[in-house]
Image (cartoon, rainbow, N blue to C red; front, side, top):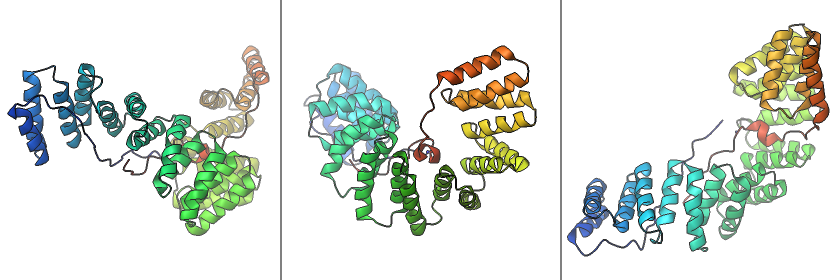
Length: 381
């Protein structure tokens, strides 16, 4: 998961905020707001607050005006002051959560939105915003809890179903993900993105052959879809069909020459085919592009041990261990490097670590194709 910027265009719905009295000043502020004179309205509300700092409704109304001006940080401060003065003020938790959401502070949005939904369980806007906030905060199992019921109420909302499907995918609930992607494909059978995501879900279930078929359907629909040929190559690589995988990786590079994951697996294939110089060149280029490619650092370590460049091999393998200390292969290779350098104690420590670790299942394709889940599509909850 390149990383997208989270943005949603959401209508601010505010009702039931009490006025601060019958004086003309609040009425003037509301009239200015209705005329679209937001800057002037904000100044009037600030004057009301200056006269009576305990007026929770004035703080809440100021927050509404500031939100309409897209001054979400200032709006958040105003809502928080209103909440401190009157926790039971109608709509205040929802508006605070919405402002935090629009700021992109998804974690901070979760508590007020949870409170808003608890107070009004049938509020679809609160449920959607809470589900999207959980997704944005990478709390995918919680996102499913809220987005699932919301999606049932909106079967034709493809964007909502896609976020739910992505939540299922990243929560490793692959059956849930596949059901959502099937629904998306029923509405749009030629959706390359949906076929790719279905393939990722099938791969997560260990059904790589079926995943490959979904990627082929995506290729037919959109042969130049970003990351498509990397995904095809990775599935073929997992199936030990290295020549076919190499062709797919080369196609991906023709579309994106600096695709670091693709460079990594091309380097791995070259290493397996004993093309040492080619492998070193590809792998070094990959780690120049990104410093979080465990496989690239591991393979570089193996190749450098073979050429007796032990010090550099240790550096590469230590980086691989840092990226995932629970994978035994890097510990094993590090043990070999230390042994070759005569560092017996360090070598024995690494081999002991290998014995402690249990081999993990293959990492799913969804986490190979992206370091983070995609951003939320535009919605109007």
